Image (cartoon, rainbow, N blue to C red; front, side, top):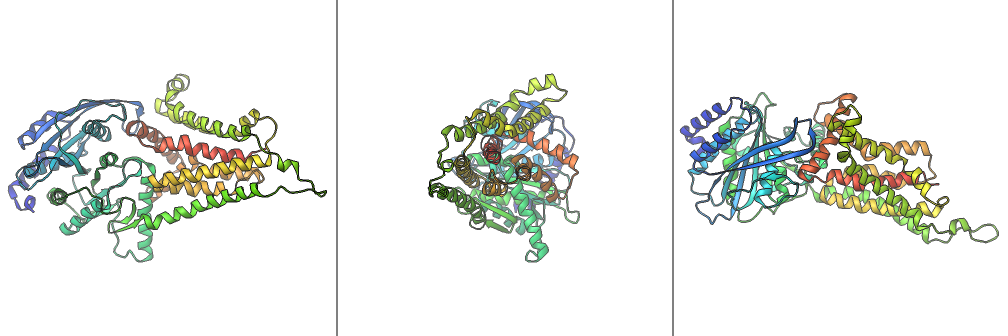
Length: 555
């Protein structure tokens, strides 16, 4: 293509990357504005600020202030009603300077072409996801997270597709495609197919989940490799967090993906010019779109870039688990409909005939959900009090408060029965279980429709509990199993399982530290970007689990 065949542009791109390779402190806003203007773009800046609810210890930030710089290449052959976005996050140091340099080189090359039918926006965002969130909210005139940002002075057309570029090393051996977005959303499969087709055409080594595609995919080792890759996608999708800047575009129905340059395979090497050819080809294809990408799947799992598992294949597995809940609810309903057992003299058993009061069923429901509300609201609100009375940081206070509220919920059966008048009846726990089973079936069904991976993982742990728990099973053993299959322990197991999948196993102590970090990041993702995983677990899944805990200790 033109970017490779023009030696002058190749030398200019190499010179630009060399200048950018020097470490920088903060984002060079003035230099970026000048450079983009020199390339003939309409350049604008946007300032934003955000105070986090508690410090982000992973990235060492609390009060975030930054500036986004973006340049618009206006379409010369169209009414400018549609646009494409190419972004590169600018982080402190030289972590992504190669991507910024490549973006500017592509802007200069694209400027001299006349075939563009859509506006192309070149965006350099500061503070990664926070900066991207501020820009997208301002572009679409929404403010869902309470962030302070200045209005955009320049806008393009309706954004049809977007790519985010991250080059973490000077030496790039392969390009990794990241698809998982906010709340488990995925872009249209055609975008992944487009990336894979151009990688095959140009000869670029491409990966997904950081893993190469095997040629012996129909062998036992190939199947094992594919399952491992697919499980990595399941774990990332279930987390609900955006795994790249592209993840926030999906909220606005914009098909987007992140392309990461990684340095893991020493026998291969890809230069910046080859990556530029790949991006040029993809944008020329996207430029020819007459409508949004919608012909392919939006729900899929990928064991490799050349194979995918559609919703028609993996959803029946979840359906089989959901059927167990429906059959258990039907069994309980039939028990209510049958006549009560009779004694030897032919008189019906009054104990079995006695109907449970509304209070005996309503009280566990109310207390369970009040505990969930406390788990959702108290960690952030009580962090200052915890810091004053205990030698912990703000982040540790939030996480430890969440764990304390979660553990306090185990006392629910004792508190519930103190509010009840007398002891619960046999029919009482059956009605409560019927409500809990139907509640869980609806909850898991709705979750699986939005985020299949999260719904499936929850179903694997909660369906066995819902099917077999009664007040008549052995208390100690059942309580132990119930705790092991609780949402908190499920998250802990997922942390260790994910580390095994990425081939970075950790000790229990390091795993516990990661576990606490995942909890704090889950709360931050909810507050900053609107991730639904934390409120889903706190307000719905945990109260539902507490209902089965109450049934186990029913008197």
